[in-house]
Image 1 (cartoon, one colour):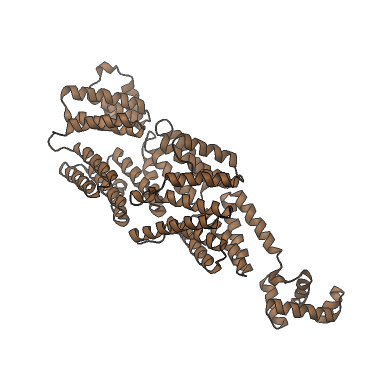
Image 2 (image 1 turned 180 degrees about the vertical axis):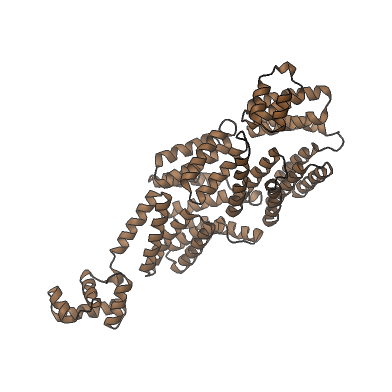
Length: 551
């Protein structure tokens, strides 16, 4: 038994599990069952963890150890909640309250205050929620628990974010995350704080914050023993960041590992990794693999939209795509604002997909409606956070620029598309930036800037090739090839021949001889060239030829 307790003290969870699992249960005290439960949890044996913790609970309850029984009951609530067993979770939470309610103030009561915070927040009773979160902080401080105090800061951040006080909420979130990064907390709470903070950073479309804290979380995971149950949870967010930043091969590798680590006990989080895998495979052009990934994500409880709708569009099933997306938006109606903004990135992506699919179907009014809501979300975000460099603003500008171009409002289209491109580049999201370049190239060409269009197409093609987005790379290459063979200025093939010879220094006589036409015909072609290009001299025509790659 001494060896088992030493392994627990060293957080050598695999060793602790092996030793405790080999002992006769009749020899184990409640503390030993609690340690066995922790060892099983850290090594991803969730059902064994629950079974051992129930035996620990029974022992504590029989001995009248209310605090220990209350803590075990709360942990059983937590484990059942993670597993999606809401009825069992509710029962264990009631038991935790029964054991701890009448005890003198103790650290375990922080868990009850946290649950009071969550319940009040869900009702929209934000003052009550904040009062409970602050009560949790006071108890943790008086009881000398840095772990629970950091968790109380996270709880307060959650209330502020739900109220729409985003800047204040994210500041508190950073405070709690710093406690984890500085090594001030126990391993369990370090992982817990990282996990909650990363979820909120991504939910509030803060890619920079999510990327920074994901790196910190993964460094912590790497320094921990291999049996780190938080590794898969942190890796989910790592996969999301890698996908956005364009490191698709690594994102796919991490997604595979994430699914292996999470599927035995946390299918809902694994579903996110399958969804990101589907997005990458769709963009790579492997539509069958993308469909399988979206279906697996759906099986595990994640709505596969908007990725599945965009897949249907790529398969040429535009009407089915529009119908699926319409249902997803209706089911999520109000979700972006009901909790003050959490999940706004999800609705933002649905709306952007609706704009894209509506344009593909020629439904300009429907696309405008989606863009209007995107704009409203972005303005609301700016009001709450006083910042424009977010994925919401970039997405709204991208969709707005595409709709303005479809409506032939070139000035507005160019303004919005240039803004979107600048934001995506600042956020270092290469795929979205390249997509904006494609629309921008079309707008440049419509505005008469052929050279600008070619530059955008070249940049887009190179980005798509680096990413491995083969269908988009082929499309960009085809458009670039078409642009090269377009006749600038509306010149005919013969007029281009004449212009090239003029740029080479040819006289009317030498040009006539070269083309086997009369000098009078050369003069007529030159007059047409000057008129079409709006120039008045051979020198200006020559400059045009060099500028547009004709010389």
